[in-house]
Amino acid sequence: MVSSYGIQALPIAKALELYDILGKYLPEFSEDTHILDFVGTIVDNIVEDKSDAYVEALCLMLGKDVPEVISLSSEERLKLFSIGLSVNDISNLKMFCEDVSYGR
Image 1 (cartoon, rainbow, N blue to C red):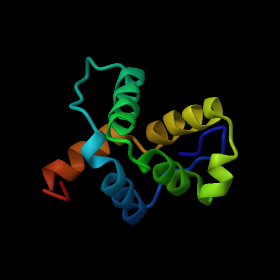
Image 2: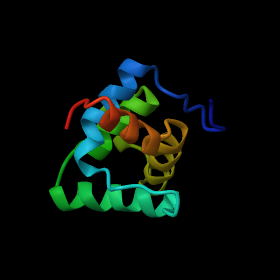
Image 3: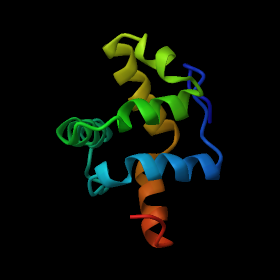
Image 4: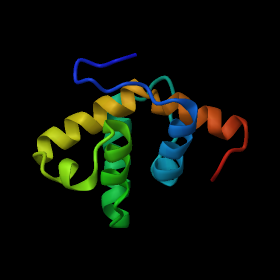
């Protein structure tokens, strides 16, 4: 899947790397959870932890380096972060990693 912003689903090795970056910030997900609430909770968890995971994840999903990502407006970063998590189906990635006992 490719979004209109050019963000592509990561190959499995990179998707696992994304999970390594974000895994501890991912809340529980159910079919009743709205994806924007899910993403908002992830961002809140990262901010609360004062982590660089947000920028690291964006760099991975966009294939850009830190200066390129930081040069984007905060609104653009948040939009791209949300799109990237959607394109990479972060809720299913979380379930997959838990099912196979990967990582955290």
